[in-house]
Length: 101
Image 1 (cartoon, helix red, strand yellow):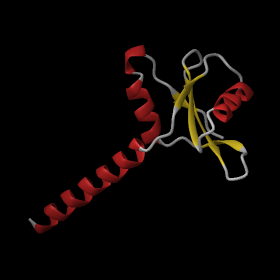
Image 2: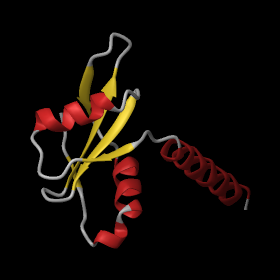
Image 3: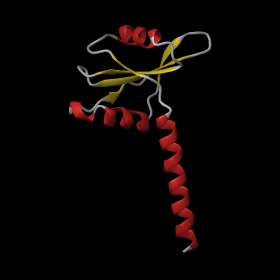
Image 4: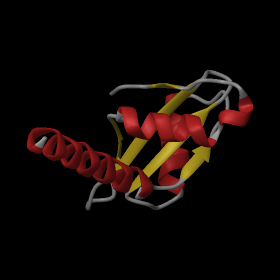
């Protein structure tokens, strides 16, 4: 019984941590049928440290991170972040895939 309680507590803690990280997501910008350079430019224009760019024509999602020097680079999109974006745009009936760096 004690083992199942500790497992349930660990599972709950893991869910709370993953939910908190997804809740702190940056802004999502739409850039349909745009090149990689156009997507990066869209992310740079938002002037945020972390920006998600979605392309519904090509069914892709990208994450761009801006460092302290002002350089915007493509970053790895986590499964939780991708799932959150797909849930947000569920009404479009498209499933986006992550573009990896």
